[in-house]
Image (cartoon, rainbow, N blue to C red; front, side):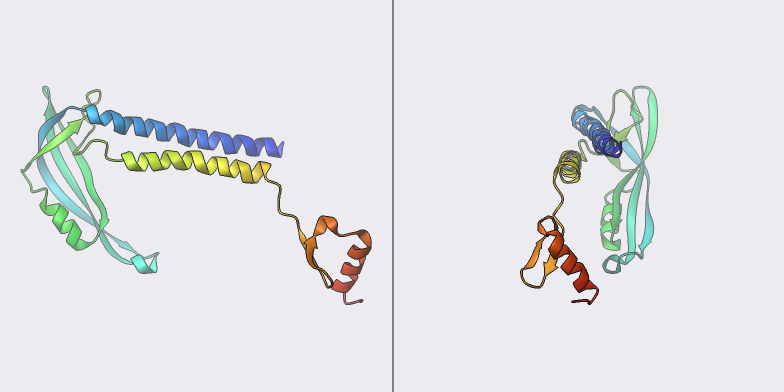
Length: 185
C-alpha cells in the first residue's frame, strides 16, 4: 500500500506540474499573436527590499513598477507592471529612466481579456522550456532511484578481507564480527 501511494505521488505531482507548465508555455507562445496598441505611462515607482539571509547577497535591492493606461476599442484599461526585480540601485535608476511619466509605450494585450497586458510578448519562453524539462527529468529519475533501483548492499568490515557485502557474510563470520565489536576477540 505504501509503495502504491509513493507511485501515485511520484506520478500525479509531476503530471500536475507538467500540465501547469504546458499551460504557461502555450500562453506565452500565443502571446506572439497578441495585438498591440499604444499606451501612456501614468507613474513609475521603485520599491526597496533588504536581503539578509545570504551573506554574499546581503544588501538593498530594488524593483521598478510602471503604471500605464491604454485603450482597446471604447474601453480604457490601467495596469501596473513590474519591469525589473531585485537589482542594484544603479540598475534600477537606469530602468526607471526608461519609463518617464507621460511617455508613450507599446502595450500588447490579450484579445480575449484586454485587461491583461504587457510591454513584451513571450517573455518567459526560456523559463517555460526549462521548467518543462525539469518536470520530465526529475520525476523520472525519482521513480527510477526510489522504486526500481536496488539499494546499495550494506558493507561490513572484516579484519582479513576489508569491506565485503553484508549478504556474503556467513553466520560464523557474522558471529565473529559481532564478538569483535564487543571486544571479546
